[in-house]
Image (tube, rainbow, N blue to C red; front, side, top):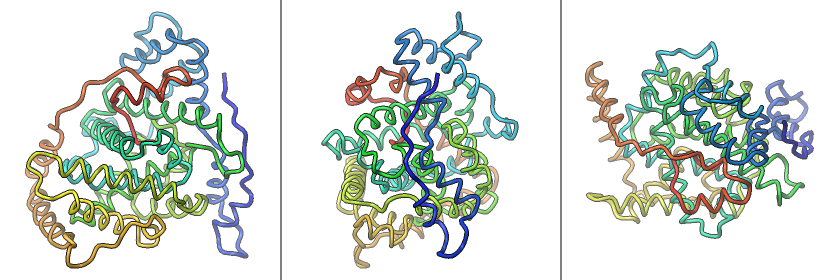
Length: 405
C-alpha cells in the first residue's frame, strides 16, 4: 500500500543552489528533487492504520516495543515493512555506540542542553514557513510552543541515553513515533495545503532541517555559551545521529556523507537555498518558542534569572547559532552589550567543562550525572490515531515525541 502526494515543480529552485552560469552539482540536484519527497513507508503505514484501525495500531505498538517476533499474527503489509526496517540497524552502525549512547550530548548539562539545543532546534525548524504554519494551526502559539519544547526535550533525552536507541528502548520507540507523527501531520496538512507552495509539507527537507537543528545548530548554540566539542567529538556526534536519521526515515543522500560540522554546514546551505525565506508566520512561531522557553526556565525552582533576562539570553544564543542574517529575518532582537550575559556565562561554562573533561574519569562522571535525569514513562503511539483525531488527542495528552517538523 502506498501513499501518493501531488508533486510540485522544482526546476525553478535548482538555479538557486549554484551561482549563475554554473551547472548545479549532483548533490544540489538531489536536494531539489527531494522537495517533493515524503517518507513513502511511513505514509503507507498511516494509510494502513486509517484503513485497519485499532488492530493495526496495536500490532505496530507491540512490534516496536517487543519486536515483530512477539506478534501473534502477521500485521498489515506496510506496518510489517516498517517494523522490519527499524528492527535491525544498518551494517554501518556500531553496536557498541548504541550501548554507549550519544556521549557528546550526554556531556552537556541538562539545563544547557534544553536551553540551547532544544530551543535552537525548534527555532531553526520554524524558520521554514511551512513548518511554522503547522504550529500556528491551533491559534494558541505560545501554549503549543511550550508543549513542543517539552516534547522535544523528552524525545532528545530519551534518544541520547545509553541504550536509548536499542530495539524497543524508549528513544527507539519515540524516534519511530516522531517519524509517524510527521507522516500523520503530512497527511493532514495535504488536505488544505496551498499547492502553489514549493515542496511538500513536512517532507524530506523539513525533516532534514530538524535533524540539523539537533546536530549543527544545537552545537553552535552550545558553543555560544562556552560548551565546545573537539573534532573527534564531532565525528562521534554525527555517527550517532546518522542512525537517528535512519530511524526518522531520512533519505541517506542527505546525511550519510555528513561526518562533522563542516559537512553539516554544506547541507545547511543547500537546504536554505530551497527553503522559502521566513515570513510573518515564521516570526510569530519563533517568538512563541522564545517566550515559552523563557517563561518555563524562569519558573523553575531556584532559577536565578528573570523571564526577561532569560529571553535576552535566548536572543543572544539564537543570534550566535543561527547567524545574524537569519536572526534579522526572524526579527530576533539584538541584545545591548550592557545587558549581555554571554561573556560571563561562556567563561564559567568553559572553566566547568575544562574540569569535567580533565580526565576520562571526570568525563564519565559528567555523562553519568546527565544520564540519571528521570525518564518519563512511555505512552501509546499517538501519531497512529485515525485522521482527524490526532490533533485533538495531542492537545489533551502530553506524549514523548519530537519537535514538529
